[in-house]
Length: 165
Image (tube, rainbow, N blue to C red; front, side, top):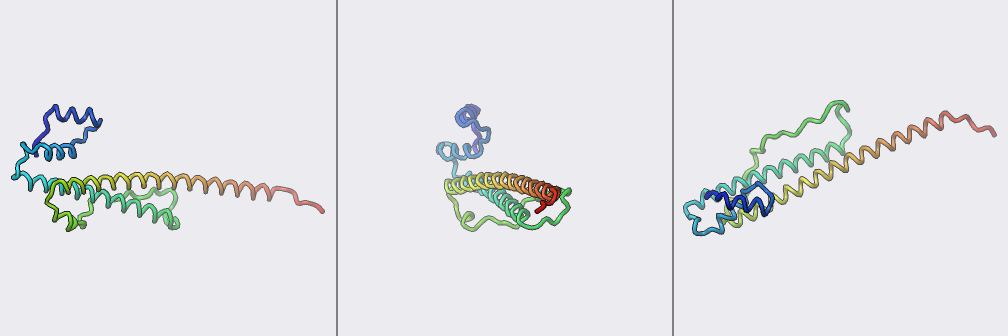
């Protein structure tokens, strides 16, 4: 891959406010055709496929975490309340392979588009997970408050003297 010049990197940082240059570097490779060599294409395609695969694996991990959290919140408590939940494994899912339609794509632009879609999906899943966690916390707090109110009302009713007719 052709490296960015310091000026190009600084311009990108100023415009976007980001330090992540990977996608922008790929874009520069595609737009600077005088610097683009056809012999570099297989390496670039392989690198983009690896990035896409990593993004898909990360999306699958987030989906798995989301589903396991949803399953835990809908099932009865099976562990002692003082025991914290076990964190999900950070090991990548090696059983997942690159889908056939991605392996068949040789156009760098198409792979770049698919990578952008995968990253968008990851961002959406992260947002959905954060929202689900916030809703879970709010629901737990509401249920705890309702239980406390019910216990308080029951205690008050038991402590009232019986009404005489």
